[in-house]
Image (tube, rainbow, N blue to C red; front, side):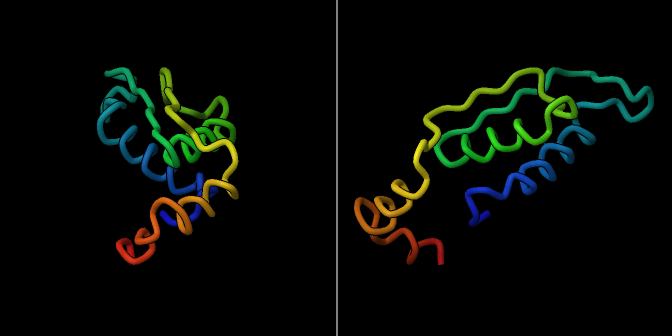
Length: 91
């Protein structure tokens, strides 16, 4: 995931986990509780997912820890300031 607004990527992962581990394949009922947790940029993606999925969201609860409030400012600081090797490391 390289785009900070690609909430569709999160939906694909959430749906896969929900079908494989949360929903009973025989009864189609929920067999365990399902929680979402996002940190930093992951919190931003999870928040976007929650806003777009609304009532279709399978989570019982979700927590967003330290989401970036100003993506543009954080992007510039991240790539040009504190972490100049980030682009090199992730390719």
